[in-house]
Length: 152
Image 1 (tube, rainbow, N blue to C red):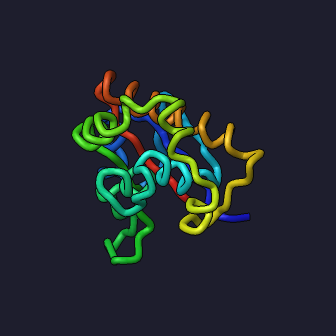
Image 2: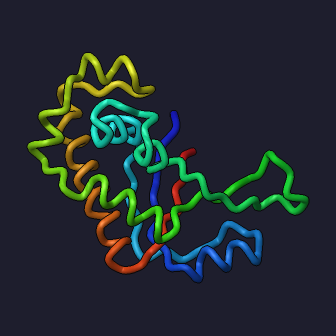
């Protein structure tokens, strides 16, 4: 068990539809599942600064649609990145290479800061998930897409 993360690439009409209907149903053009690696990916991309913008928002966007009929503070919420957020995040990570990411890994330091520790055997999966995320944000930016983030 535990908190796993998934990102959904959607167009602007899907966000509008969710806002109008207050129902968490949408069509995505692409899905990226990173499982429990979400916080370790954030650690790598931010070079160890988990709560630094824009990295802290990758899996927990600030923009949210409250699905509660009475719009209470307890939600549930659909959290998303609009086109501007996608462009900002993509610009911050697009130049990172596999070599850059591998150079940033210190399992001992990282595992002190993340919820789900990574073992030596999990490093390649973490790197692959990080590269997939970088490419995912590039595609979203290049296609004027928006991204819905889900952790649960």
